[in-house]
Length: 561
Image (cartoon, rainbow, N blue to C red; front, side, top):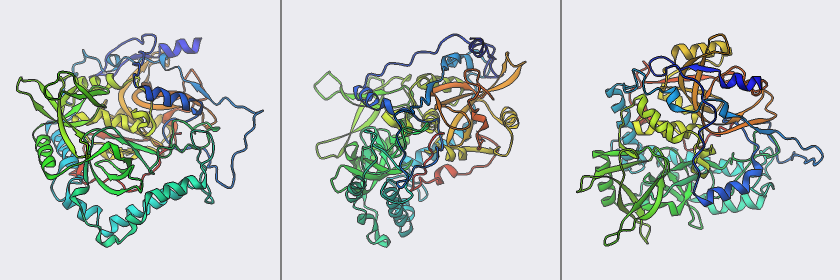
């Protein structure tokens, strides 16, 4: 009990300029109830698998030649719940509304506009170096040339081999039924991919404008064309649900795509998007013609907006009716063209598919608390507004169930401000001025973070996990020691040997302590082998690096620890 009381009273004074003195109120703000039935059903079926890790690396591989041996008499309970309610989750206590800099920009107008233009060019640009899926010039010279086509074909072949349990040395994966995937399972997926369509005549893989499309729904991005999960050994701490190794990310409604390949059964498309390449359900994509693209692109150039409220419904009203038709929902960070109706109301444009899977434009009125014009002024007030919508939401590896993981959380947070971040946590450090502290001890790391980090503008990367630095506070239980506070979407904490997990499983505010009184054996996140920081808007001249960053054709696994 004394340890719990100490943890409750540990954080006393938030940092200067943004945070002021506060106490820690008891209890965690309750997570909003989810209303989507399939999410609950899916979770209920997979809950027994919940044996996984925080956000990077995993235990030693189990190979096809060395399957794990089940031992019913040696059951090990290697997962528990971390009491996050011991730590204050009230955003206003860490980003104080009464702080002097609450409405002051964190980026100069010039810098924010530069980043926003690079963001918009990634989606809709037409210049030779703009990596938009609708930019035929860039696609022809950078992705669909012989070298690019060869890389895509080779990467897809590697994905197939990686999940073939019958191959020697391959790490064993299991399905939702706890059984290893069979050779027939992987052969069926490989046959449906029709890899020959990628291998055929790399030197003449021409750009085809008919392959352009747009997502009309939220689309899970998969490494292979299947909805079947691929979990590693669920009996080991740090493996199993929710870490489906086939789950890569998600595309939001209104995302431009270019189709590179189609599965034999027509159910899946291999698409290039502004963020990554992967397989999506064909029902989430509609084709676009020149007329649609011209109208959409022109609207986006005039006014591009972003969703800042969680799971915003997109619904339109047909002529002659008064009842809105629900189409889908838009997560925070969804970017769509905005317009103004004749009655002065602000509206959003979003795509739907007609009976022939061609994209049509619909509109819906959304107020300024839900949909904002980009680039939204990057101030502590606005960061806090988005953070309040995201905090407490469940963790979703690779956007499983359309929830965020660590890197999706930071991407969603910064998108309304026109700051584009790559999909993978390690690549997100390129958004700012980097400092590599992997060779430093934990005290040096924390001191450097306090000295060099800027609250709300500093990313911290550790072994495949990313978080946002909120600033330092004084810890009343540690003789006034300065403690960094962070905002992160994290699966959990673990001891150094990785034998168990204390699950947090969501987006939270958490101090970077060297030890946690709830479990002194838990390893500090600041004590991992890798520790880097990146200050967005630092002194480095980044030029047009944002526009030049191209999604990798090969997914790099960053499994949690």
